[in-house]
Length: 125
Image (tube, rainbow, N blue to C red; front, top):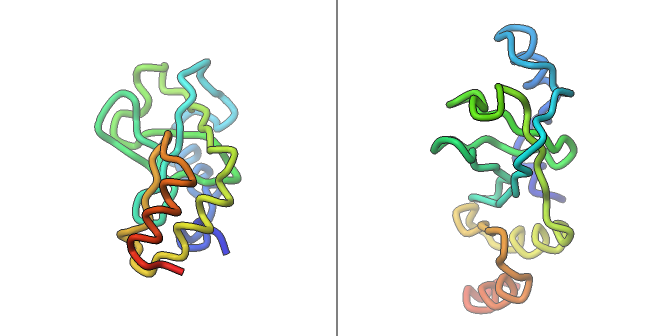
């Protein structure tokens, strides 16, 4: 089981809808940067917008970001690339041991050792 199993459908249907109905840029048109780091919030991979206070769900199989709040205006309304941590699978394993989705959080820079320590403190198996 992976965190994405809790998020429903992938991003393909979502981006097709946005592109076709709302006139957004084709998903292949990536801006040159910045590359955004995904994080886990309440058991969901999300990406914070670098331009506003928006955040969107991330799809681990489709590493693109488009902010529905500001439309990625600072990069000419183009999609941005998303990066996941190389130890994503281990992070997900540790977070999925936590019974409450509200306790399934990870931020870039937080180590696996920190997650393991938190799990011990919460008496998570």
